[in-house]
Amino acid sequence: MGFMDRFRRGSGMRMSKPAKDGLRTGSTRVRASDKVDETHLHEFVTARRGVEGFVEPRTAVSDVTLLLVAHDGEWTRRRVPSINWAHDFANKHQVPSYDAAVVGIPQRMRDYNSRQKQQRKERGY
Image (cartoon, rainbow, N blue to C red; front, side):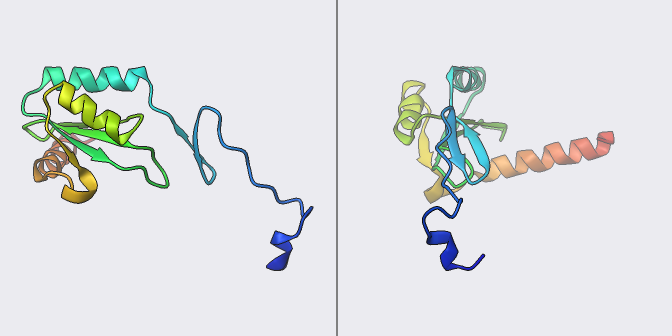
């Protein structure tokens, strides 16, 4: 197939329709956020101390996410409906929230991941 053949009408190549239940990116379908995600975030915030929120923007492979990081580096990440929703959620739960694209992720999260990896290695996982 030549380059210009892709632009001819009736060539058989059609754009796919958007996914009804989520966002479609290439051949990947991204699940939309739901009440289960919100419940998980709420439980994480209420069960831990020193939690901060990092709002991650939409990318080619995932929708907007809220990354919550506790004082010890334990973390969770879930899809959220929008950037504004994430900041409102954080404000409602008295959790400071930041734009992850600007400030990055905290070192304590990377340290926590390293500790978890080392523990799995020591246990033989």
